[in-house]
Every structure is written in C-alpha cells, then in structure tokens.
Amino acid sequence: MARSDLGSSKRSLDLLSRTVSLILRLGDAMGTNDGRVSVLRERLQRAQSELDAHRHSQPLDKRRIRCKSDEVLGLAIEYELALLNPRKDKR
Image 1 (cartoon, one colour):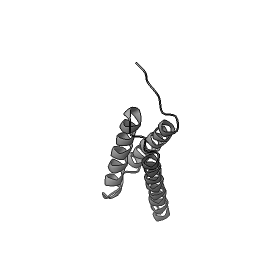
Image 2: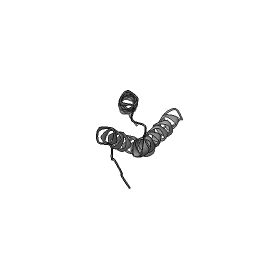
Image 3: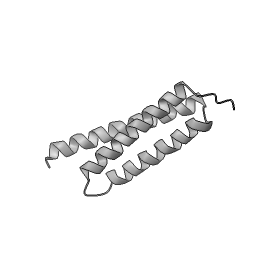
Image 4: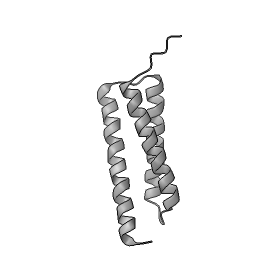
C-alpha cells in the first residue's frame, strides 16, 4: 500500500467525519427529534462511532473502511432527507 494512498484515505475519512458532524448540528438547529428522524440520528451516530473506532485501530482494513464509509454516507443522506421532509404519520 502506498503512503500517499493511505494519506488520501485518511483525509477522505476526516472530510466524511466533518460532514456528519455538520449534518448532526443541522438536525440540532432544526429541533426535529421525533420518530423516524431520531432513529436515523442514532443509527448515523452509531455508524460514525464504529468507523472512528476502526480508523484509530492499526492496521487499517481498507475493505472494511470502504464499507463503513458507504454506510455512514448513506445514513447521513437519509437523515438529512428525513430532516427536510419529515413524515407526518397519522394513524
């Protein structure tokens, strides 16, 4: 594994982590804490913490990092969409 590739991966993970923290702050600012939004927030926080835990372990498993990164990014997008379009289930 080339050193520059490892540095690039770490920078990408740093950017992803920063993006997630900004999205979570957006959720806090919007004050939406009900139902689906709160469940997605918890999933996103859990996935992000698992990714961070693996990032700080040595040696890095690139395949696992890619899978976890994809999961975090997908949850971040889903959470953001839920913030923008909250469902109003009236049953």
